[in-house]
Image (cartoon, rainbow, N blue to C red):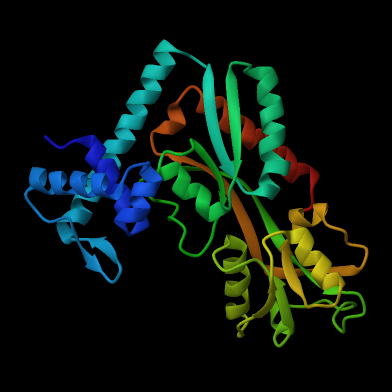
Length: 304
């Protein structure tokens, strides 16, 4: 009989690629994780991991077992949701991880609405970038992630997650006043050779910008880095370079000394994600519905 706790450990190691990182995500010691993996190998009678540089990767048998683990863990989420619906109804705490812009535009308004509609649901919000929040959901740290598409993100058909689309927003070019391109329509290709300001590598928006530039035939040179878009706009206003910023993130920035120009191509696609099977949980259904309603209102009242 395979212990489901060990299946969760296997999935964490597959996601994080090292025993140490998986242990931190599961709030266990590395030795405890190693012991669980050894026990799981004894249960299935095969090696499940092999060395890969400084980390580990799944063997062929490990990948087969991981596929089944995802199905088993999703079914356990469904079982927990059904039991919760039968026994407790809608009372309890839900943890949501979201990046800052979406907290202001979608999550916070949804929390306010939900407080009136479902006072028994207590929502706890954690600020996390889009790539971090998905891992937090898979590791069980939070129940819901409000995340963005990025290079390397789990695919839409990933069997570990259920997704709920919320909204998409374009990126706009931010130029210093007086810039040679400030009065013209432009394409991303027109920005080749410019000095760039943008998020740090690893931030999903950095990936979107870099990929848009690659498609336009060049690699952007990031001279200045900040994950705070208000700081990015301030640097552009000071003449430090050009930037591309998600349109809704510009709402919180001082635009008095910059010029904003729309550009075709890059966009930030925002969605909510839960562990597959958990979308039926009675605490999550009202929250996910309210997030969708809030996002619909956002799309109807803004220029996206």
